[in-house]
Image 1: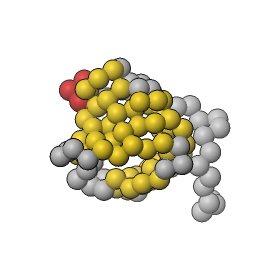
Image 2: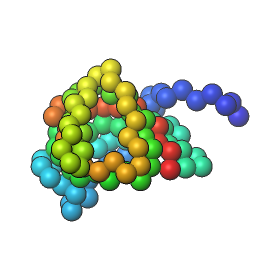
Image 3: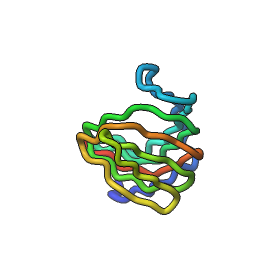
Length: 113
């Protein structure tokens, strides 16, 4: 087994999901996720969402790199973070607020539980 893993989604069938109804704020976003790694509390891959807004409450660490689109992350308390292609950031455990997708957004992610 190689210890190198490319984040390459060619040939991977995406999982489709939606935010839980109780978390919905606006729109009808559809999420597609291509997981390339799921082991020992570590997840990595590519995620995409169509426009909409939902509540988020992070209990994990997540590194994100926006590949396409525009989203706004709205922290509880009002701070807004507009992210678009080329932006990279970390969401720390305890981040609460809303994720609003303004233009279909695609990101690479690494999550550590």
